[in-house]
Length: 280
Image (tube, rainbow, N blue to C red):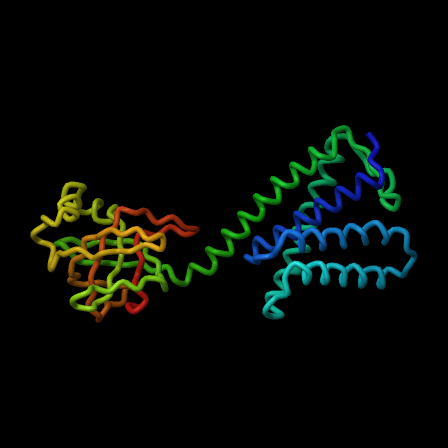
């Protein structure tokens, strides 16, 4: 099957749109779809025009570089030069990866490029199949890239905690949550939120159930703290006073409470508690 310029135009348009979308996704840009489409149209137009022009290699490379700059700027004007550099770098990476897999699939399936300058190639399967594979491949790459980016930025806020309370020593990994603004209403002390699984490992499920029922007698100053979510829902969690705590081996000098939740924390990095920022 030979694919001529009209099909290659569609290929370029779709691939450019996917690349730009992935850049916006990784950079967490809130951009309109028509900006992505317009930028993709510009890239496609120039992809058709460039092979028809005769110019020195250095000038051609410069023009293609400026084209990529304009394409990235169209979808979102970055707040800093660093952000722009990252956006442009992601544009090149995704272009190379997506283009590479399209070339590899065509050759692997017995196809070949008839003439790159004439924008024609042959392949034994429809182009739509290749594009569908490219889309799935690109989305997987974007998900991996975002997770790696998030892990890198979360890692400095991950702490090892050693907690002494309820007659036992508890060890767990916690995340310093800047959004944790929980304070006990009466004492005005900060509250660290811990998953119930942390206590179950040391004390068992029956003890944790008794804690949630407010019937655990050896819990210092056990009472309930109301929690209000962004969606307007409210609940209460049991909180109790802590005897001793070490964060990354350093003793915490400030008094605080521990609140226990049955909600499981799910994030790019695994942790079992939300530390109050005032404790670190």
